[in-house]
Length: 339
Image (cartoon, rainbow, N blue to C red; front, side, top):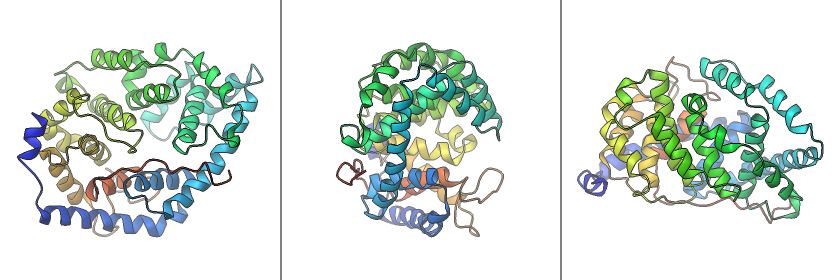
């Protein structure tokens, strides 16, 4: 059904050009401002655009991020020799967790209840980033097996299938389950999908409030995105038909009520499954173009803010959707760059 629906609405060249030009215009704003953004935002932006373009300039940012990443992992791995290290680090992560929004405050409170999980999830993320860069089996990160052994002892299934965690953390839950599988620590994909579907059974979207509806959508998009290793490989549309069919059936509400961040991730879910011709993609592209502020040249926040730092996530996703070239590139591989 998805294939047939996609074939029925293939975009015209005029539409492709209009969308592509809008994406390139947003990109031009961010390329100029990129050196002024934080390292975290530069990394997020450069990784995503490298993986759809392989443009060499993004490797420079990846190299700088890789250098910091190696230092962080060395410190974490050495710290694991101390049995109190994970507890101390988890406490500090919770203390430092941002509290600007209600969602951030809820997540901070949740992490405070789960002991070493705050440190474990950060360590897991860093190891996966190193794996993306081809660094795990290099001398740059010696004894990384110690970190893998530590993570293998964490109660991941209890955390990732917990209903309260799922209710405010669904996207991160999806990320973690694929990270664990990627590093051969645990395969909890079936258990976590089942927990997600218990939390959000088919047909339940109409009963959800705004925050939980957005949480559900984010979770669904991240099952697809994390499976692609964050835009490094294609996914099988049959594996995610339950997600893509739900998006297709709910596209009117998504366009009316979801943020541009979520809309873009929904479109990227179709794109990663090779469904660029699906009508939902074209409708989301039109919505993203309409959301661009002519003064700032970017998609502002729901409150009208055009802050480039805070808006990077939303806008780099929009760039990807609008100028999607139809190829994916792994990495970049930093294993031979002397980190």
